[in-house]
Image 1 (tube, rainbow, N blue to C red):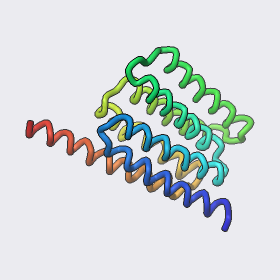
Image 2 (tube, one colour):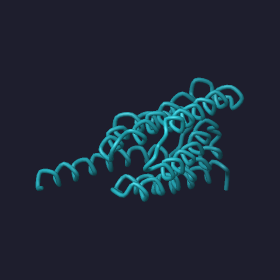
Image 3 (cartoon, one colour):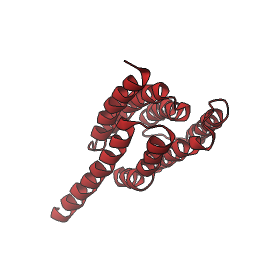
Length: 175
């Protein structure tokens, strides 16, 4: 079995974890599932030769840890440090990693995700997912490196996010 085969398999596992995270209202469960999915996506992208995607997912794991650790007392310097780290990983991916301009899609997706998770509530996070994060990762997963798990994952994330937003909206109308 080839590295590409295993890259697709680990991407599908990552997809399952990320999709499930979008249904959790509990932020700890949300971040834990996101981090787990990022581990599998990082391995997947490495096996598929997408340095930027792998580095952004590794940074996503670090972001999840920071988010969990600082849930109550987030500091501006942590937010800035995360985004500087994403930028550094993007520059490395674009130059030494040979990704060129393609590294910008995963960078933009991770930056939008960080802003939404840092300053937003559950609905803000889901809207960020629907309007920014998923479309940017979908471009990365189709144009930069063909990742079946990534493509399906973003399609399912969009659908799952829409379902979540409908559920929350209906619940508010009932209350």
